[in-house]
Image (cartoon, rainbow, N blue to C red):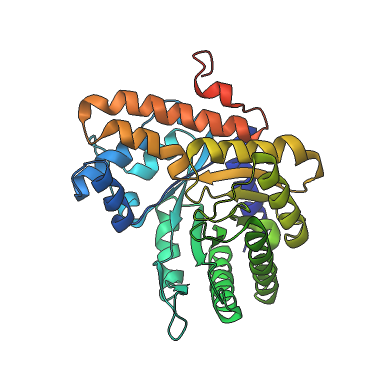
Length: 344
């Protein structure tokens, strides 16, 4: 393992206030979003949509790296150029999702374990030949009555650590993503408690598996009440709880934290990220950035609707959304920018 290569990649990903674009939705997830937008669920439509994203002019101003799905990294633009090559030429580092999805955990109702370790060493070697410099593995933790169990947390954090070890062995930066889901009626405090428990378990396991913490990116959830909870905390409350949880759980040696949006609206995700950076940046030992999917993509997808005539306008929306989130990464975002014609 060349530790300097890992460190250099992380610094490049987040240079100049940039963040990550997660465009690694599985075919099933992508098809669901297409269906909701009235778009045919075909491999060609998925290819066209991903080409729309990677060829967006100026996207590299806000995005330092893009996480791809296996199908995407094997696809080409209509001009025959591999998607990863288009990104690289634009100055955006290509990454890859390598897990095989969260599956029901045997004997643990309502809990899931992420699979995909079998054959991962060989897959990473192939991806590296295709230009990949970082990877992602997502674990999902649900809050409900009597869950998550310690067994679920331990199994998922151990899998994340085994994945991270294989990535670092291959010279690929691992994004470790232990997502505590927003779905449910849990309170902000319950989310805080579970997130803290999961993160502490994760870093214990990472230590046990001899992971170089300076060569990883943490992709956590923000601390937010469940979507079914009637109490909605304000922006500053979410930011404060999130920061306190991270300070209590994440070693200072970790170079970067890139939040997932987790189903938040684009505006909420930007506002929360902005408050974290604006109010607490001087107290945080890490780069605090974003690795958003829907919070950047969704407005563009809704406008595109699978129509070639809408590509240019959809790309403008995508570009603008990425710029807004990048402003939040620096603590310079305000809601007035959402409608301002002067913000580019």
